[in-house]
Length: 507
Ligand code: ME8
Image (cartoon, rainbow, N blue to C red; front, side, top):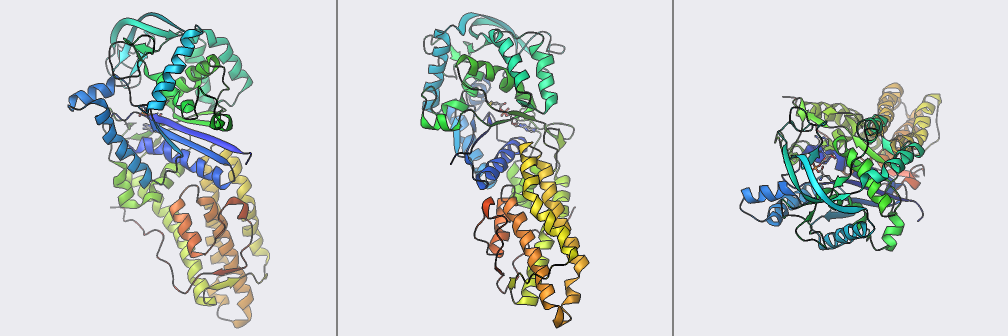
């Protein structure tokens, strides 16, 4: 297999239970991974947890447990959440995994030995909840620009990474790779807020807390989060050892991140990779935030419900579909239960569910569940059949541009066309006259073919529902290379399958 696709989510802090914001990035990564797998790519989809640092150390102390005990419970819940959301990750990396800790030490030592890391003194403004250092110009009234809480001034001996040395190369890289950071607005932010004012060397070790990977040649220090965290994308593949997996999957095709950590992925990470002599990832996409009640959903603000509540109440695909469809990928968007219900009713229930149910019922009623192509196409069919034929190329292009909501919109456009086609061809009238039987069968067949194509594509986005549909249609070949292989005879059985979605009452 020659085509590969390596996609990552951030590795999340298990400082509290995961919320719908974490689900958001992970569902999108999952949809892309599934899409590429169905399209014949050899996919590596990685997620995980970023477990070291002061915040987790503090939280564990508050709870009278060790940091490891504290995170273990949250990670178990996170893995259960990913299972409930049908997240098909290939690898879940924990930064407390022994292999990772060892490899981070090797990376740190290599950078030190070659002079890219040096010892100095750190004076800075630190936000404990966000685990971020800020410069004087970034803080607003002594408050963290991300979360708005007070920052503290700290001075301590620390190791530094020579980020400033890579300024020019990073600028050149941006110029030569205009699509490296998307959306473009985020690239412009990087340039004007961080790169143009001049990159400062980066503090990469701490002595003020213990919960971290020890610096291998100076155990007073622990590796400060970003070298530990960012390296996850390569330690999982074996680096510093150049393994067959590393050769196969690196560079990553796509790092999906929230907009607040683009700076780490689009500046620090490239500089680290340059220092390690490695290729840079092909793309960093900084998406927007899901907003609740006007603010960012956030662990440290605690303003959210357990995502399992929504899965239980509305079904996994209602949640997945909402995450993928509601907000143009890149922008901020509001998450609310009401919007989730409206979206589920309007698209999944009214458009998709109704279409599948009506079509299968007609197949059973008029043809005893067996429907073949009788080739009695008329002009009215051409529009639908052409839209179906063009769909894959349209979706490929949308996926390549990460316009995921538009990809779904295009599939639902075709499903809507199918519903209109039923209204326009009025099969129930044709059924009244035996002479129309072949024409009627062609209509039902065209609908089944259209539904099949949409369902095969939808496997990437709402896999449970899509597979239920394909089961009802008894479609066996579900990869994209069978997308346009026509089924000879649809065998729908004799019984109408259960509704895919029940209409949710808005109150
Ligand atoms: O930043 N809307 O971990 P983290 C959308 N450990 N996405 C959201 C979101 C929201 N309201 N809230 C969180 C870290 N996210 C580091 C990453 S990577 C080497 C280290 C998602 O637990 C989004 O992807 O704070 C965001 O970037 C990430 O969770 C932050 O997760």
